[in-house]
Amino acid sequence: MTLSPFRFSFLAAYLLVGAVVGVLVIHPLNLVVIWWELARFSETAPGLFEFLHARLWLVLLPRHLDVAVAYTVVGAIVGLAFGIFTRNYLQTSKAYQSLREEQTALIPELMKQGETGRVEFKSSLRWDMQENRINRGLETVIAKTLAGFFNAEGGHLLIGVDDAGQPLGLDKDLSTLKSPDLDSFERTVNDIVSRTLGGDLCPYIHTVFAKVEGKDVAMIIASPAPRAVYLEENKASVFYLRSGNSTRKLDVRETVNYANKRWS
Image 1 (cartoon, one colour):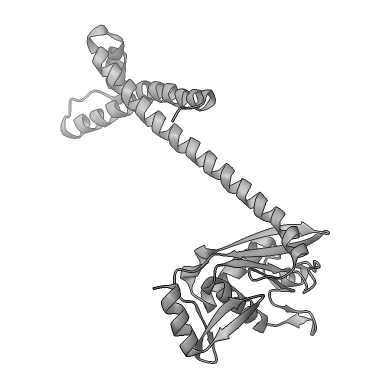
Image 2 (cartoon, one colour):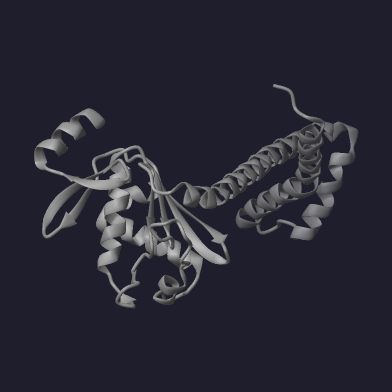
């Protein structure tokens, strides 16, 4: 694997800066530690500035070249390690941002295609459009759909979209939150999953947003779960599975048979 000129110059810069830091920062700090140890056990120890003044310049003498080289190498290694970490972090951040943009651009396309085995539309998260009020029961409907996706092959749940694929927006839902913003909406989604299905499943969902015809639409991307997911309903654990373009409740025998095949 070869490094591009940019990557090589990037790491070389960190290597050079690290070498300078080794001599000008790490070396003096090490001397401060040495002086501190001397001052603790000796009443005749010189002052800190006197101690540093007497020893810092010694690295310039030929007979102390090994000391200068040692601190240069240590600093260069630290600089190189920090440079590799920074480069990897920037690359990861760029890749994540690119993926998020791709997912956001996917929302209008899914709306045009309509509901499928891996796509479902919901008008709202908790706002009852017919009764014009908060309806916490709708959160259970969201949880049921996500449970179906978790137990199947994953899927995309779009919120703020009617059955025909037309954008309705999230304004009503946002107005019910303490902080009426998209970050709070995403936290609410995670809270619903944690509370109804299990906190261990939160890493298996990812929420992105897009403006469609001037209205906010949310898309919850659910990955297949590593375990059977149950929703508590009326003091009973219910197993839901995405089947076709709907979410179906399985009976006990169907659940056992499916779970044995799916997570064997």
